Length: 342
Ligand SMILES: Nc1ncnc2c1ncn2[C@@H]1O[C@H](COP(=O)(O)OP(=O)(O)O)[C@@H](O)[C@H]1O
Ligand SMILES: [Mg+2]
Image (spheres, rainbow, N blue to C red):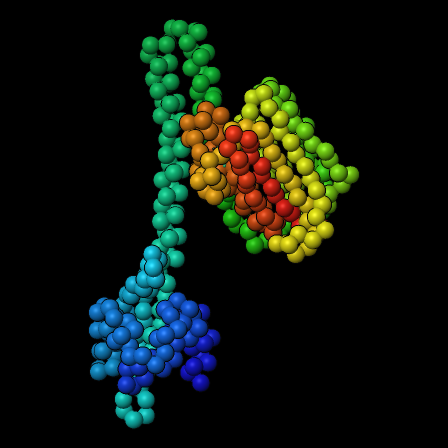
């Protein structure tokens, strides 16, 4: 009976019998702490004084307790909060129930939030400091210099636009986080959407000596959110333009796959490739992290926020799709987005 209750718990849990041996270890406990624990004495299983003492007190005095326990397997350390509950048995002795709660997950979340706030503050502080400097110059040395004034105002406009982009990207991310479980519902033709997005970006690309090529299929139906799909396509094309070759070519393709193995169904595969210098392999897995850039200075001068691919990743996830980035140094980068076909 108690065994089936413990087995139903998501947290690791163990029952120690009156002799101090592990009588039951539920699947979560066997998974997280090792199968070998069943039948062994708790002293050899738990070993850490922080946990042994409350367990001894629970056996001896029937006193419940809460304590911490660090479990390490290889390089991974997990911090658990352990609830120690004595359970009286008919012969007057006691069993002890241990329930483990993983605190590392909660801690990782906390430290990610701290990093994020730190990054945002830093990203906003840089343009703000620049703008404050320009204001001081305009109030002082450049007060009676009309040419200098125009130049400083142009720089201020540039920095303000950067802050504006950053705030818009942050808002997009926070909206996406709120929607992650809500699937989009509109029928969208990706072929038309990609062509339209290219139309919007072509003038800028031409100014950068970049040619955009796209062989559009007649139609490509997916279920999606129009604005978000435009955001994916324009982010990827903008990256290919910014970080690709000049002069260079950005090629897009949109292909139907009858049965996509990972999505287990029909899909559309969008690829955006450039002929740029590529990305060193050690950076590739981290590009979708917020604020991660290969070359921060270059991204900033190009007006980047470091959030583009993080947003793309979120949108692809919300559409139950897949994102893949492949790059060969010296040859170029290819980003693939796979979306389930409708
Ligand atoms: N096509 C590409 N070629 C080379 N590097 C790229 C490419 N796309 C993205 N990157 C790298 O990935 C980083 C993160 O991209 P992104 O999240 O869009 O941020 P941003 O473009 O604002 O810097 C970029 O700063 C750049 O270093
Ligand atoms: Mg970008």
